[in-house]
Length: 217
Ligand code: AP5
Ligand code: MG
Ligand code: ZN
Image (cartoon, protein in one colour):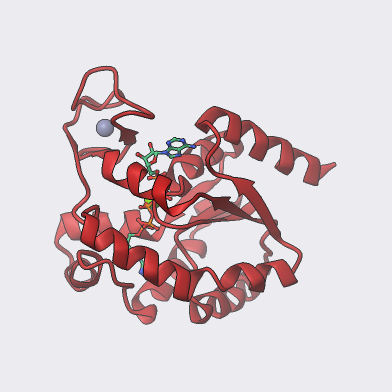
């Protein structure tokens, strides 16, 4: 299975991507996570990306497209993958079509998580991530068993550097201007599946599974 998960910042893309990849045994390709790892490792690409990410701006297309192309071509992606946070503009969407063509594969569905701005802001400001393994929590909606500590690995929970009020506004603006128009692009290709991203995490996960199960019938 090959999927895209789309939606504004804080919509729950990462949360559901992790659940879906485990369920279907496919590879989670999150460009945001890849950049955060590169920043942590201090690579040259990471250092360039950091300048854009910290301000809430998009990383230049040539860098993003390069890392996605490399990843999709890896053998571990043969069984399928889920792209989270890519494509984010029309240029990236067209490049993805070319990459998929080169690999002789197609996207099965584009999952679009719909959430209103007021809820997004609450989600992003309450988000905490594990500094060790990247697992995501929310202080109210999805708290860890012990405050500030990751359930999975015991690492410390921190706030993402781009989760400030000011940066969130920029990220939402860019989403509306550059990324949202892609929904039409995928609707025209009959791939778009709109989902109510406000639902409880487990309920929404079950709805997505039902939807994807139905597609294989
Ligand atoms: P990226 O990491 O992709 O960030 P984003 O798109 O802003 O999305 P988020 O990760 O903030 O939100 P999410 O939808 O994953 O929500 P989550 O599941 O965490 O990108 C970061 C930056 O990298 C970009 O700004 C850009 O600079 C750069 N970048 C990345 N890709 C790029 C590209 N292709 N081109 C150029 N630049 C790129 O959930 C949020 C919170 O809500 C959590 O606390 C969670 O626990 C909670 N939650 C989730 N679902 C629910 C629910 N159903 N009910 C209640 N709470 C919920
Ligand atoms: Mg995410
Ligand atoms: Zn952890």
